[in-house]
Image (cartoon, rainbow over all chains, first blue to last red; front, top):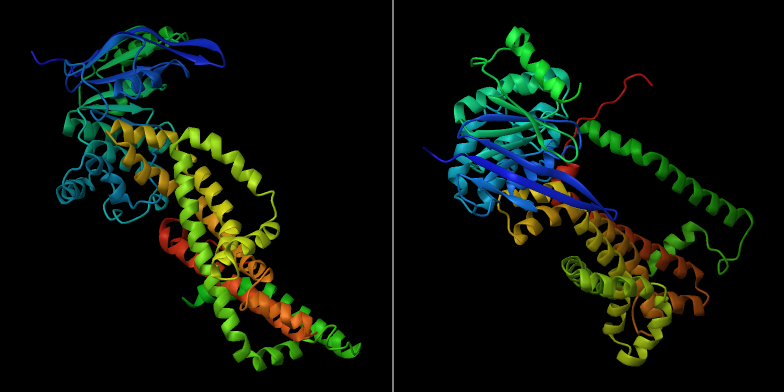
Length: 251
Length: 264
């Protein structure tokens, strides 16, 4: 059996804020199989972002272990992070933004550019390679941010409320589009959101993270068949899952 | 192209009209009140004095321009260098930053005579004066600009495996450019005045010297001519910096949609 893509075991993380200690995460364990879509939902400030930062390797846990593909080697450069703000560099044209990962990894530029060029239509960016980010719409900017993350060839995608800054209409379209991309590339996805419906619609499995200190309060499988369509959210099964998630969230 | 030009013209019109109006008023008062020329020459008299003294003036202008450019270049390189050094080393920041600010409380005009004592009447003391005047805004804006980079963006690059060099050249330096140019623009407006101050304490050539000699011989029209020339030099250099700024940051000054109400 191939090793799990992500394994987080009994991870705790504390911070010192203005002289007092904040327990951000307390004994969190989770895992994601290769190609699995796992969502993390929880209230604001429950440590979801801390968890992703730990998995990406931006921080180290106070205790517990994090394994990627079964090893505990350094994680920076292996997990593709996509934050809520697109963080496109305003001074780079779209194509140069997209090639940030390959550039940092000192890969062949021409090859990477060909790869990016071929993916532009799927990401709705055809004809915008030479534009500056300021000329793109909010949805386009997020799609460009995801393409930039993908082109760095991470083994795991960590998406931190990637659609949080978008309006409701754009957001719905982006969900379908994200599933399309994921079905094509089959990467392991860790998806942070506080939208329960979004989590159900996208995921194979949803974890509820409780508020400070963050722990895994509930884990629910989402057995809805794929490809998913919006009306599946109206089924009894989805309603049942939603109820369990909302209850665990205390809502 | 035409509407853009027209818009630029309309933008500049109020300022141009005001300047022309003030000059006309000055001319009118000088003539009506019959003010002595050595007291306050009319703009027309200043203009013809300028045309007449062109040949006399030219070597002085060249000299001042050379001092300004050399001094500014030194300040720019030293300022960028120290700004980057301060950014890279927290220790250096704490050690040098307060000293830098304190140094600005010492008037340059007080240091200039010392420089003459130490370095004589040549080019060097003027370059140092210009350098001292221009240095501070460049260092401070460079050091602060490099700190202004988005920490989220830096974190994102780190998740891709970026080195410290990547972070500096791909994020921090481009993020700092707008502030660095703010510093450069402040510096360049001071630079010509700095050169003239440097000349006042001892020189054989330069706009400052021309100004002093004109004053001593009550050629008030020539004093005004040199004031006008130094203003033109400053504006020209400022404009040049603006052009470089635009060329280096096309994303900030690129074509942008301009929405304008039709009825107003």
